Length: 292
Image (cartoon, rainbow, N blue to C red; front, side):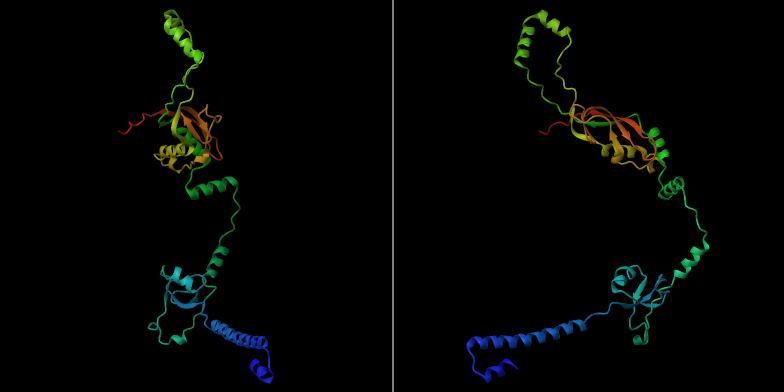
């Protein structure tokens, strides 16, 4: 019984009349929504398209066959590489009579026959496997890489950096008084010059601008090895180089970088072979003149 017939049957208050009208409108809207969902389902597009193969494709068919394929695979892979093409109405007399069928077994029978004809290979040991990998990747063996590094690298690898000129520390009052006494007495000045200095003011570590990192060392070592055909195949990275010594401001070593002038021992590791020890020398470089 609809809301309008219910209103005509008996008198009602305004509140009841509004509720009845809202219920009637809700039923009408639910019917319209159901019809719209049915229209959307009927408008779905096909999931495959028929194409003509220009080459033999394993799992699909021979050249010239017409097979169904996903539109994305054809558009992004097959068509740009010239493996298939669209089928136009000019290529066939009756397009409606085309039967597109995919041959899932095409090309698989030959692979099965070839695998059955090949004899079973015995599993390789660790040494044979390492040699096989080295031959495929064109990389020298660890033992040979260690020999190349030991023969091709010089005893010292030199880097140049600009030193930091730190100001001299100020003298204490007692040191100033002693200096004045030496200046006033010629005999005291001669004695002070002849005696060794107990507290030298020259710093033990000369700091530099920037640093020398293990990555810098690896790049220099690669450049040294590139002149040799066999040495160019040795793989060396920053992770294969270690700086020997304790970290600290007094030593000039900060993790994987050098921050001072001097000579430092480094270790070049080769996985599976002996490491190579070399000396890295950081020398002073003349600072560029200041711009005026």
